[in-house]
Length: 176
Length: 176
DNA sequence: CATGATTTTCATAATATACTGAAAATTCAG
DNA sequence: CTGAATTTTCAGTATATTATGAAAATCATG
Image 1: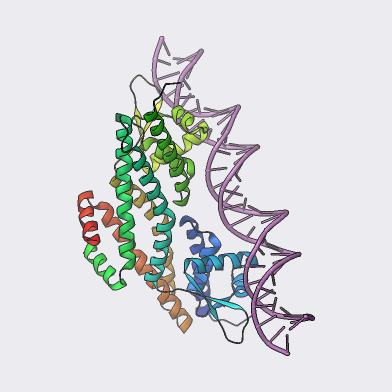
Image 2 (image 1 turned 45 degrees about the horizontal axis):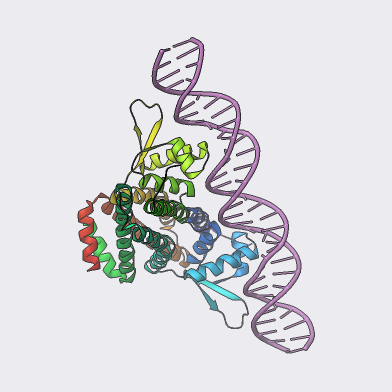
């Protein structure tokens, strides 16, 4: 056990709280606790980490660590890196907030917006020629939703394609 | 059983698919399937419905229908209405897409953004005076996240406060 | 206030999701 | 090749979430 002073105790505490709570928050965000915790851990880690280090730090099993590290890599929030002379895989997190935002936005669009849009488009399409007040009302409601979700989808693409500085300009103007 | 023609068959089919799939989508959005299905059902229902009608339509238990109707009312996505001469409670959904968006945005902000911001602010605060490269790096990363999430929080408020037509103007300009 | 209708609650059951740990597969150095 | 290190898979287990249904509470009406 390394000897520590009060300052590094505080840092350790703060880091641990950050990891623990970021994990809890992940649940709200629709990603599982472990995945969010690993993401937090790597995001604040000065160096890349191997699977065993992640396991030890978070007290989780190898399978769990492995699965969630791979999932994070699939999202693009974490990269695998090689350290020469070491056969193990190491992992490091994307730390740029704008980049993190874009990745999450992209994934959420894929999982939440696109399937909704597909459904709405299908329902609008297959009822557009039906007669009767009920059919008209259904088609109308579904079409309005479709239009809105379609707009959101395009906006999401546009914003994600922006440079951070430009997005910031717009945001600042909106808040000004 | 009411006699139907081909047209109302098609409508029924489309409505049923809409309800079923909107429920499945709800899962992705972090709300449970039944709640999303009830929301879908009421959103496309020409009339308000009572608990028993919802139960029958979705083939769910009374407790389930009750709990989720109340939850939808708590969100503000559904209103209770009284029908004179009828002791039962009836429910109708908010149908305006912009209003629906605002309600969902507000709730997501409350559940996803605000707790994250509180955590980030706390971590930034309690590490801002610590010495050492590690502490500096942690504080820096957390502060960047805090700034970004804080901005998102404010933006969310601003957009939700806009009139639909004004938000549409901005959106159109961004897409143009 | 008694009664029947309706709403609400909640213990239990069912389902869905996440985790473990060990075995199997892969990789790589010698 | 061989075998040790490492990654990957996955059946079984644990946990968390959601649904049921019946009992309790509430309410409205005569």
